[in-house]
Length: 555
Image (cartoon, rainbow, N blue to C red; front, side):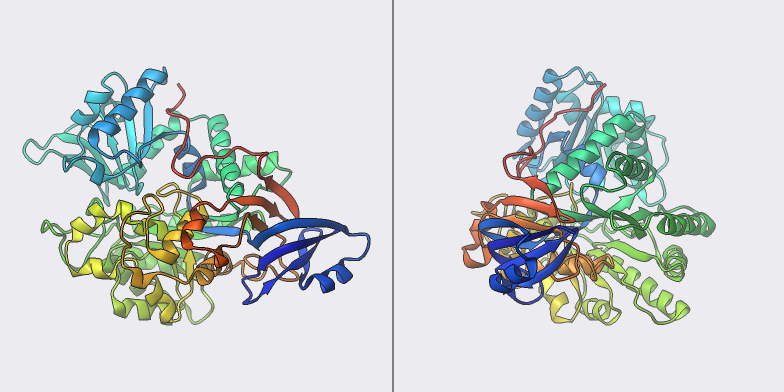
């Protein structure tokens, strides 16, 4: 089997030491250490690659992302940088003027950009009155639409709210106002837009996600809301790539809330069957995903105390509906990922996991709670004691997108926001990710926020609770080694070590020996997956840090 000797580099192994050379044999690392030893083990016939003083680390594993949605978002009007309502409307007008597409799709808008106005269909009608407009909120938990989109969706003033969701309504007239929250997004908007999207479109969108991930050093991803369209796209991708994929994908099947326990548990059985069928180093269905609550920005996260305006929100999954599903998935050996942003939601999630443990007996479960933006100190300790992975996204704490988040709570709760170091201090495993496309998918800006609590979008802003900042070397480990642990791949991914899969990236320079701001300028020079070069700088086009490129959905 051919061997390749890599030299002249600083190698972050995620094993607690740095090396300067390594040997790859076939698809795996054969040796990692000093150059003299590596050269001897490689042998005279090995191919030698001089890495030019680059910084090598295990390929990043985005431990919580949405691949097909990410590819789709890269083709939507980018609105994350819209600074005010006029700017947002201008972006939409320009998009509409530039295309004859039947609908205008946008992504990433922030409540704080609306000049303290409420998002309404009339505001979008002012910009684009002649065709449907669908704008994903930055957190993907709500969609803002215009009048034409409401009509296309068949939503009128009498349409009932789905379980766990809400159709926004004018508080004075009761008429649908153009906002669709939580399951109204998942069960009404997503299927409707999927019906207008061809398999050819989805294939191109998935490939765009793969291309953009490889260009920034990501070699693995955990897709956290796999549905039928995603599965079909993954299967077609396997066929295109000779039963491999450009990056390694783990998937959690999205379980939607229904009225009956039988309908909910039936989705667990489907996931278990898929986990048996799809179980390779390239595509593995490893568990289920449950969205216990919403998000703080739209006041749909389940909190123990009311929001600043006095409102409260019930969880999407209460204890009675959640526990049987969690227990069934646990009994089937599936990993369970629970979205829980509000402090009450993490209480519900941990209660369900604890009950599943009582029913099914002790073992290594590797369940996870996603986001944990607000959580009690007691539940930080309980999560660690239960062996639950804390799956968190530093880029969600970027000060540039915190204004609305903080104002919705407005009290002591903002002083313990995104408490990453509390989890590691308690002994929990912390896995870092981006949750793309709710945030930029690039790992280095994400790690900048993780290690400084400063903004990658606007570095001039003050740090957001800098006491919770992570040591950069630790953060690198959380985004590689611990991300692999989060998806039961710690024996073959996430480290540069003998016997592990040769998935790695080479950065221009060593971020551990530079000022933190250098992370925003550092770039991936090369990305290798399974011993093969999958990206080399200058040969592949990928989206820039702040946005997408295409403007709208094709007709």
